[in-house]
Image (cartoon, rainbow, N blue to C red; front, side):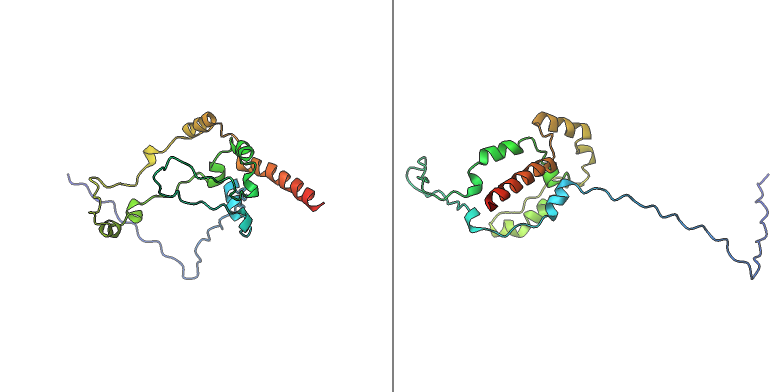
Length: 180
């Protein structure tokens, strides 16, 4: 036998004066503001004005018959900041670069960097890739444990914030010494 549809229920009639049931308001959650990452703080810091005495002119190597010979640079001006560069480098050796530059790498679109116009200007045919990128790199990403293992292997265990503390102390000591 064919199935019968359930009998339709009569629509409930609303009273003209009846109000809709009010929905309770959504509670406001006070989100605890997160502490900014050290790299975010670094980017907020204004740069000091350029000082001519901090510049070090880089000159191109002159084309000569004997290119293996280095020019004599013994009389060239050396900026003050470069006098103890090896010690500065040693102090920064164990700093995690992600704490300075941030952990996210911006997308690199090679078609924007090397447009067809650039190839044509150089007299070359634009590169055509056999397979386009889906831009889905989720499976190719490093896992958190791989990142931690790499940092440990490279000795990058300190954050920039700890380095900046020691630099602040050094600067304040140097500043007080220079003021006297």
